[in-house]
Amino acid sequence: MKQFGKHKRGGLDQSIIARACSAIDHHQRKFAGYLDLKTQYWNRSAKITALAIFCLVFGGIFLLLLFRAITH
Image (cartoon, rainbow, N blue to C red; front, top):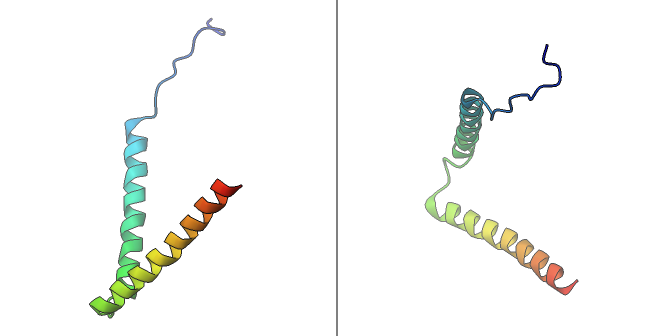
């Protein structure tokens, strides 16, 4: 009767990791397909403009946070 013996501590089962990766990949592909449908009728210049606006907004937020972190 080994009540106080050492217990084996193994890592995560590889099948669990594989299923998690597969589920994440499935959701990413589903979301990418959704975004592709939302922008399928945009021309190239509209997509570039949207990308530039996205970069400016989030780049500005990042710089603002960085500046506030340095000054405080």
